[in-house]
Length: 326
Image 1 (cartoon, rainbow, N blue to C red):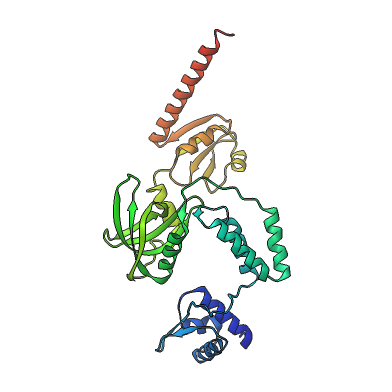
Image 2 (image 1 turned 60 degrees about the vertical axis):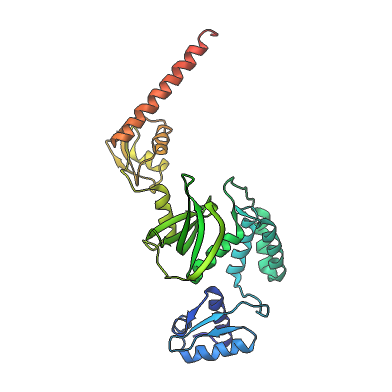
């Protein structure tokens, strides 16, 4: 069990982590009884922390925002993580946040202990970030959506689909996912009565916050995996090729997360994608500079035949053009 001072800091950290906690949840996390939680809450209130409490056996606690709120508490790892995030945000795809991130980072470094300040500055001096051209999103819209996901309230917004059609959406938001290139909202569409993935850069107009909604779990429980699957579409057939390359050599050049490799004699192997085949797979296999036979499915065989014909035609055209000058 934590000592009283350490427990108060741990309790405050939990209250800052999530909008609302029940008394039993806090007691379980801190390994104390509900009565101790109530006493600790009163001690934090006496120190100036505005903590609201709901009545009842399973009453909840929340840390209210306000001008008189004492400073945010961060442990060493959290402080470094925030600093890294701010440096990354300064070159990111959230419009208008670059200068704000730099200012926030300067303020953070001023209050960091010297040991952490040196770590953060060393990381910044040794790290360079390049921007990726992609759709930018409004920082206020992103903050509103994230808050709605946290608070379990409904969102209403206009949306432009891939085919440029516009519609109004009434949703119960669940999570925000960043793919490294685009930002997505995962939400339950109340009109269509199904889960949907929305590109945040395609949201138009004002995002309106509605009444409290139902808290829902993303199908499968993993928002990032859900978005990834929706982007790629329904899982299709894997693709297979036979390479004139020993299996042990192929395994050194082909990561196991992308394909399985089976021996086919001493000097050949069968390479099969771990998921749905894509055009890139065939091109990648061709760059391994080994004899190759496309095994299937039929669509992959047809693609291989088409690419071979195009390359042959391009080579023939180049040879014909070069002949008169040779």
